[in-house]
Image (cartoon, rainbow, N blue to C red; front, side, top):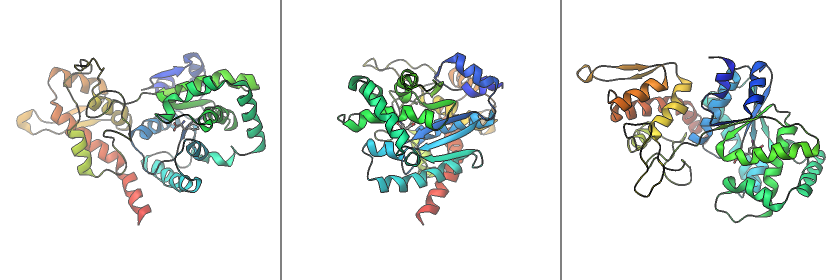
Length: 331
Ligand code: IYR
C-alpha cells in the first residue's frame, strides 16, 4: 500500500486532501496526534483512532497521544485527581493494544496548558471568538449538557494544542471535525499555521445499526469485556446480508455494524481473516480484504452467524492484552 493510501485508509474525511498528500510525500518524523479525555476503560471509539495512529506510525510518522486531563475537567468528567488516575490506566491500555511504546509520546494536557504563554494565547482567542461560534464547535462533544463557560474555553484550548504540541496532523473521530474547522479558522488569527486534519468514521450502534455507537447508551465493546461478553454482544448485533441496509420503518438510516467492525477494526490489524466452518458447510473461508468478505456476505456465501462468530474471536484477540492489563492494574 502506498503511503498516502495507508495514511488515509478508513478515513471518513481529510481536510484538506492536498495538505495530506503533501504530508504523505515526506512523512518521516512528522508529528500526528489524537487527544482523549481520560476514561478508565478503552472502548471501540478509542480503538478506531488508535488504529489510525498505528497506520501513521507504520508510515513513519511520530505519534503523540494527548491525555486531555484539563479538557476532561472542563467537560465535567470528575475531580482533577480522579481524572489523572484514569489517564494512567488509559495509557497502559493503549500500549497493550499495540501503540508502539518507543515512538509514541504520551503527554498530559496539564503539562503545558497551564503555562503563562498558552494561557495568554487562550485569552487572545477568547477575545476574538463569539460565544456562538465556540458553542457550535462543541455541540457534538458536550452532548446534552447545558453549556457552561468551560465548554466555550474547551474548543479554543483544543485549537492551541495543535500549535503547542508542534503537530503536522490532527486526528480524531468525525465528532471532532467542528473543533478542527474552528482551529483552521483561528490559528492564523494568532499568527500560527494551519495544519491538516483527518477524521475517522463513527461506527453505528451494534444492535440497531442506527446512529453511532456510544459508551453511555446502547451496547459498546470495551477492554473490560470477557470472551463470553464479546460473543454475546456480537451475536445480538444487527447484521442483514448487505452493506447498505434499508432505513427502518421510521425512516432512520442504518448501517451494517458487523461489516463496519470488520472494516475498521479487524482488517487493518490482521493480514488474513479465516472463517472456520465444518467441511459439510463448505469448509474454512479465508479473506485478505474487507471487500471480499462483504461481497460473500451479500451473495449468501458467508452466513451472518459465521461472520459474527469470526468477528467476536478476532475482536477478542485484539482486546485480550488490554483486558489483562486492566486486571493487573486492579490487583
Ligand atoms: N475533544 C476530545 C478530546 C481532546 C482532543 C484533542 I485532538 C485535544 O487537543 C484536546 C482534547 C474528546 O472529545 O475526547
